[in-house]
Length: 168
Image (cartoon, rainbow, N blue to C red; front, side, top):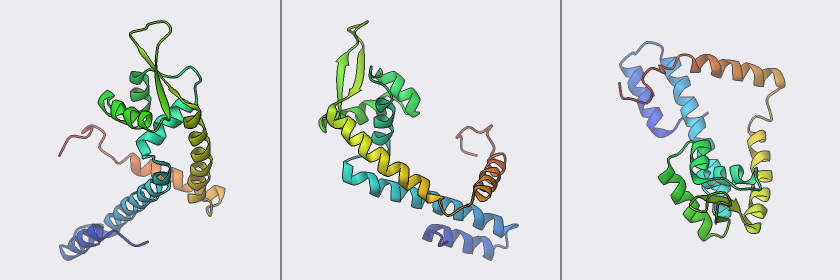
């Protein structure tokens, strides 16, 4: 796998400085390059539908319920702030993919629901996206997938979770 240019430069510097475990550093950069490539490919596949990853996630969540969801519930499930959800919903509403409705039990509250157009787009994109995602690992055997999952879990255990996103 080709590393992104920035990782190539960092790896070359790690080699120049003779840092310990340059092979481990290279694996990290390969993983980051793969993740970035998947993100770019995902964005390219969603763009023709007028969707970003954030919009896609909201459509996915809304498609799972006929009653709709409150904006704060969407934000929580999507793992984003309420402000972010509001911006995403504004875009989806401009595209007529969602509608904001007064909550039947509390008219001050909102429920967000997919429109017919939103349901059609969701079904089409979910089908295409699901096939693409599953195809990413389609050339791995069941045992290779299990091994990769176990290895990723093992590496995840090395992360310092006590920092919780704080700079070191």
